[in-house]
Length: 112
Length: 117
Image (tube, rainbow over all chains, first blue to last red; front, side, top):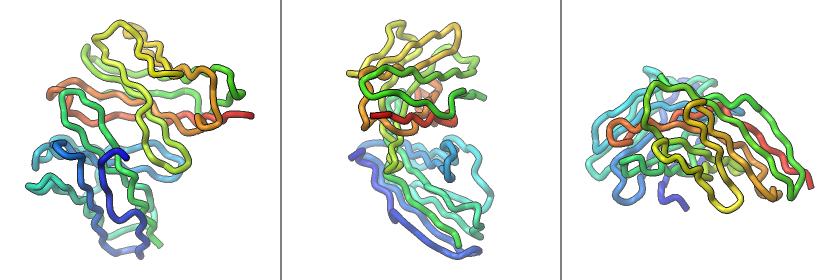
């Protein structure tokens, strides 16, 4: 158990819909990262938050947005969903200073 | 921008034998961290080993060791005495040390390792 909690674990939704993925980082970790992994693909970095503020942005679509709340949990919002958005979405957290980044178990999103 | 390249999409090894997975990276930074993550069929991301660029000594974790060649920008993973449970996708990853190391991981595309009984 990495200590990073993601919900829901599985989600099936229709094209055009909007979903929210939730992440609770490890206790004390200020940084949260979101990654997308499509079938048989590597991990694509989407976005990073540090203590409530956006720190780094990767290949995140405009239809996607995220935020980190005062209690440090984070949400990834995916809207106007397309079939190609079907993927495993990982949240990860770290405490900084080059420390290891720990991953949650991921949220499987299937768009039908 | 940093990039990580894993040139072996698939590898296989006999049980109890040794296998080496290759990874190269491109960066203009002098201080950074390198990682190997394992992703078994469950798709969970598991840290295997990490290396700080300022350390010349190669990292070792039980049966797993790395060969870190900073000048060549190479970071290979050696798995000794391979076990069936080692079968997984292995990802090499780079992390910049700027912002006190609070930076995202940049991943390679992965190497799928099969272990033959």
